[in-house]
Length: 170
Image (tube, rainbow, N blue to C red; front, side, top):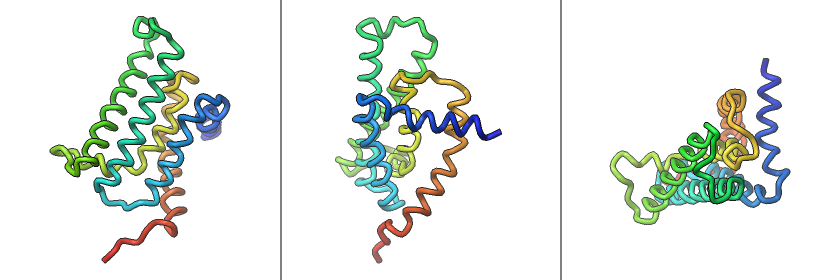
């Protein structure tokens, strides 16, 4: 039962490394994932800057891939998946700009402190990267694989990097 999801998940992780133009976009997200997992679990302005940079980076890469793949007539495409890709990209860019701005200003917007708490958001950006970069189409199987492997990946990262995580100061 899990075998098709495992192969789908492996495809999501390996596809960006098969195209050199995607490698430059995804490698910083892997570094950001490790950096975010090594920092404090508490939301603060430094983590908001890290999150904001990751979100803006991913969104910019997806916009570049979108315009490169579709050209000047990108918004007049006939595919029904276009609104999903654009919605996800705009959402990620918006959260990234708000998080980056909040971290630099040292002030979160009302009910926006969650922007400094998004340690694991890089996993989702990495896993949807080939979809958003138009190398793979959205599908329910891919979506289910991303959700299914989220908890095991989080557990491996959380407990695997626990010895390297900074201890809170008293």
